[in-house]
Length: 631
Image 1: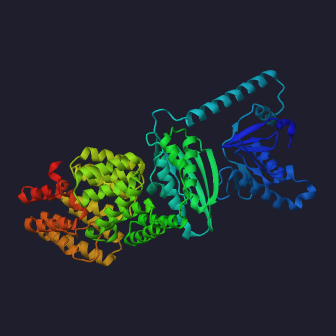
Image 2: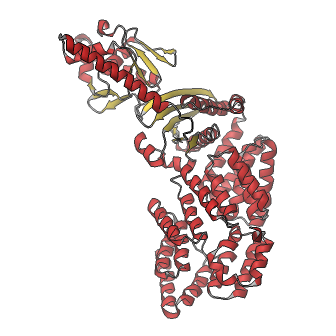
Image 3: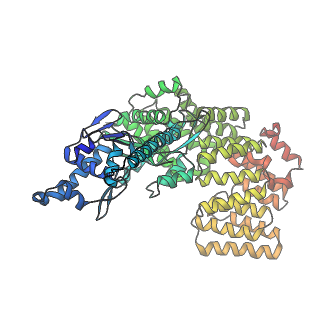
């Protein structure tokens, strides 16, 4: 290394400042220990950042001829030590990239922090003796330094009224055991929740559903940023061994792919919440959020938890996020296990409340059994911690769909949103479980738009947006939205079933049959059976017109295998009878749906397919009993 050229040369890469004169690396003011040979390799890589430095060149510069025998092992060791110093990895490099069969390159953006670098750059251009060229070069370098610092500072500085967006990419499971994915995914979800409540006025955090689309992704930070519309990305990894856990995290600015902050935490499992709070605190500092004193106190107040209870809780989250009957059973078992281990564990009670509230939809549990359990769990969670937004949201869902207590439902949904404005599902349920049922269609659309902004890649939320349009009788918008979801996720059966029902309600039966066929095949029905059912629908439609189509739907409903939200439950059968103008049977089914507390019964006042029943006094009486006439 030519020390004369590097005597005062300093560069910055992310949080690291590299002093090539003193052969030292500092991170946030703290010296990072590094041996001489790895540092010499680093110095050569920094001579031409972004360019490949071949192994041959490194060998020529650093390993004398008589030591060539140990070159490969020595270079590999030096690179490994550099990656340890930078918290980097060969699999997902952010600083030093291995170029197969060629060499290495330093890929992180490099900033000049001392003007002497201009001398080095000038030397690489050749010995320039002309005084004018030296002056011009110095001016160019000065301008570049000032411009670089200005651009970075302005990009990095939060504007007073701007809302910036961030996505937490799924933490990589570095345990080597796929069975430990639940741990990395669960901690990812908890970090998302913590960041979402820091400064919601200025920071929006992409929801878990969209973030999980990038699990094991090969997409670049720039591409991810464009797809979900964020300014920052947080990524990292989790290692777990025995009662220890190691979490690494780094913050990336999407505008220039620069690494603003990175750190690793090696602690007891019982301190995992402290790790999550420390990460949230560091991120907020780096993107310059102004946190309230209450938030500062909350982040600082994390205490060790029962590690075994927390593990059971994360396993419960895994089941909850599956949205399947088996997954819900797994969630109930594990949330209850967490509560047994720690009866004061409020998030586990909130998890139970969420599962039980939706168990009639996803878990195959009768509403009469699920609703009281959901209510009990939600109230218990809030008695332990009144600030859990998910518990308020679940309580709002229960108040709306099972008790028809609309003022209480509104109060709980609003409280959930106030506590966590970045909670996509709070906006979703406020929209379709309160605002839409009471006919507040424009407000419902606004809330649904907020949910989509926070969870743009969620087909479930995008599909509900189409339903929101349908309830408002904006059929063209609804069709367009359903079709957009089909492009986003062509294998989402519920969206095909909903579009099929919309086509049928509009009298476009051929399109309805095509979509229903897709829904049935995607839910696992055999092609032979589906083809027979769809042919029967077409035959009866040709023979008897609309009446034949709806009569055949009654036959399909008797089959044991049907898509979600098909016309199988009393509410759906009431819709079929309304199309057949069989009012008495339609009202009989609506009474059954009301008695069972079918979650869809709250859609009664806004469902266009019940128009044939609206002139009947029994319809208004039903609305009155559910409190829907107060809208």
